[in-house]
Image (cartoon, rainbow, N blue to C red; front, side, top):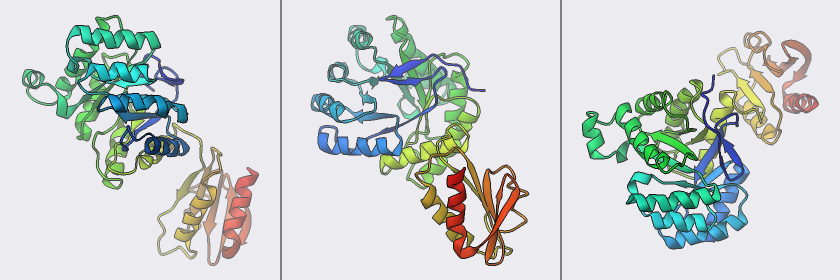
Length: 348
């Protein structure tokens, strides 16, 4: 069962409560380069990104948000570190949310200025705790970087905002270590009501980072923890969104595409199953049907093991059987199999 959390909104996108889990990403362009940043955000939108974050290292970047917002369609979060004035400028220029830790931007008066500006425009703040940025005194208090020091750090930032009567908050507790991340969110779920942004920070390249993020994010989602996710990859952020969406599909939390089940092949396989699966994936990419397709190499893994599939094939020698819900409907020669399968998919 999914953890119950407070509902907030980033722009028009609901997070927490009964809202679906969203996928976020962050641009890797120079935010001051409006044209390149907009181009990348539009690519992210096309891939299915729900919310985008941009770095705000100086006031020029904060002011660029105004022009960027005019060209994009999804909510934009400004990523701020240390300087409360950048937060104020980002808010003024139309940011839909902030990623900023209130304990790191100066005096209470400075934090209050940011909070008042956020209240005025109903802009949420994400408190982002990373294992590499916990204060030394907290690390010493809890004998190292662990789930206790991660949680205490988050609670410290939360208290600053709550003392100012502000609760439009989202929280993340990320580490590069999967076990630490999972333990931290699990512990935080016992005492924090705010929605969680989850992910494994700095997880690596599109190959290793995809595996690491899928294990970490997937583990949390299976526990019912997580309201919005980001897959942090060293590469094109479009890949982050693709992986994030696929994690949700794999767990049955997003049903917007056809799911393919395919066997690993073995010595019994007598058709070119690998080539067939690859071709089917390409042909169905833009078909938005929440159905399950099984592509199996032989009768052993055919209608029996894949009975739960809406539609499938079981390969034979130069031909295959097509079945629906475990019931055989036709036998097709291998050279016609792809077209016949797509025809049956479109009929569903």
